[in-house]
Picture 1 (cartoon, rainbow, N blue to C red):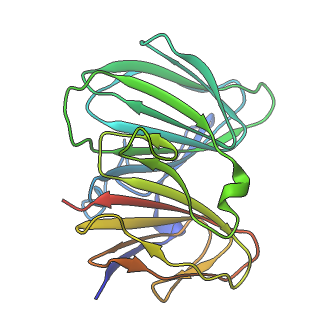
Picture 2 (tube, rainbow, N blue to C red):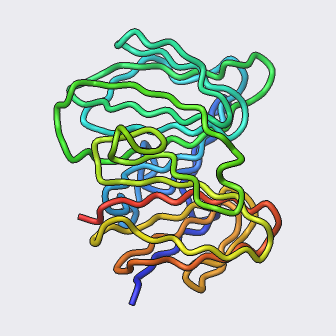
Picture 3 (cartoon, rainbow, N blue to C red):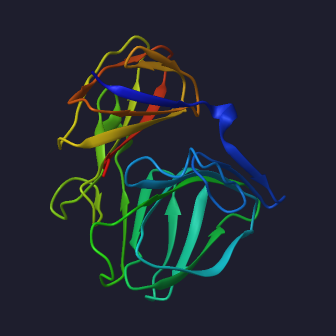
Length: 238
């Protein structure tokens, strides 16, 4: 029988610095909850809003797989590998920090906020050569189905990371049902509701609720509102 843990939208950590408003599913920065350090290899799930022309100055990372998914607006990225790019709504960006990188992130717009998810996954290899990748996704490929956006395989759909992890996004009509089949035994799935509402494993979820599921091979899903959008993050639990 599957096991689950529910993290409601309202229970998340929060920081508001004026230029930055962020909600933290797991302990991050000044938000610390000993019961919310990580879900398996998923370490960080931050839901960030950055005001126009503002952003994160240059800062270092190492030995972490870092994924950014813009939800509204555009994010400008610059790093020590020489990459300068704009990540737009509908894109996914990944950095393997590996042996060490520095980077900055800034709202590319001078008049509208940018909203994006920042996700960290523990790698299965340490001190790898730093790497950057960015991909524009086709939003039609997620209508009433799971669109794979990340995997461990450079030749598979989406971007890839140094971990046996798979991310998928689906956008569903009301009452649409679609199971999700896990790739590896010993993996779990963290579901994050981007928009709308749904029922996963018989548990009702609303916008920005999160649900971790493990000890199962298949996950049940039913959309309960029009245009429900859900991000699934399958990661090893150990």
